[in-house]
Amino acid sequence: MNLAADLRHTMAAAIGSDAWHAALEAVPRELFLGEAVYRYEERGWTPVRRDGISAEDWLRLVYTDETWVTQLNGVLAEDATEPVMILNPTSSSTLPGLVVRMMEMAGIDEGDNVLEIGTGTGYSTALMCHRLGDKAVTSIEYDSVIATRARAAILQAGYEPTLVEGDGLLGYEANAPYDRLIATCSVRTIPPVWLDQVREGGTITAPMRGWTDGVACAHLRVAGDGSASGRFVNDDVYFMIARPHTPPRRGDMTMGIGEVSASRIDPALLKDETALFVAQLAAPNAQHGWAEDIFTLLDVSNGAQTDVRPDPDGGWTVYQHGPVRLWDEVEEAILTWQGAGSPHQSGFGLTVTGDRQYVWLGEPDGPSWDLPT
Image (cartoon, one colour):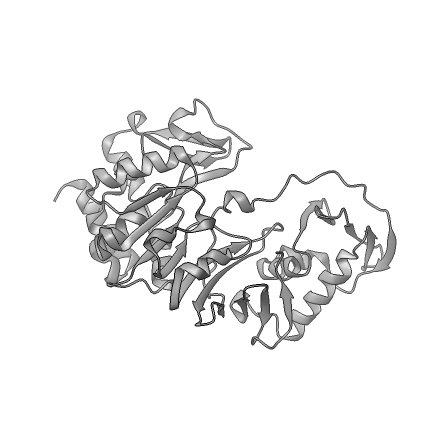
């Protein structure tokens, strides 16, 4: 057994998925990482080039169960000449363990016709091809450069699925209906066309991420009336947000203006991922930030803003300005969540109909919040 095959075997055994073991052993991940990847270090995102380290070290990097970023704001790792500090990841090879968890969450099995939103490097696409067969896999990639690279790697690995360059939020009607739709990018809301392209009883599995960076992963089943509903999963799974769903640039705000009140909750609570997710339900168009110990929210759709700061006596003062009292909405949602025992995101669910998408707490008839249209 050569080193690459040996490392694939070790990785597959460590991930521990019997159903996907053969695919993990067969698909050469090194084909999908190109000539370089970014590694985050203290001095920034540092490009690690294949020709800059030994062949053995490169393979050991490839078969570590880690996510390797391949593009930052459109700049491929192989084109970077020095570390960069600010740019955000725009494409990566997700750690194989998470890829497999996502496919298991989606319930992908032999005989399924699958639509993948976000080809990325093409590694997950190849895994599905190995298990399901080429004709059962359709994958869409938004970025033309990434799509071209993925196509070349998938073909070199010996697979020929349907590969589409375009907006995955529009799906791909030609190969519908699908048994499973799986998104390897996060979305703010579920595109209605996805429901049209998944058969009755089929599923949609999609990480969701809003403008405050609150996250949850939805697993929905499509009903005969064209609606879909289901709970968020137990796993904290999220990916880079789909580019059409990225938030607009946050503008400047003047703090300490508007109506003044006392807060009933400590804003530091919103450093918790689930609490931030709940706050996002109440203020879906807002972006948040911290200015030392002052928490801020700015609604980019209408200019409403709030900042919450500690008092000398141990409480918190709230300033709210604009057409909507953002903190009142957030505070009420947090108190409702706490009253239900502060459950994880999996204590919530999502229902999508033709004219409404809403997240509910506990059961579909429980407290609910509409997602932005």
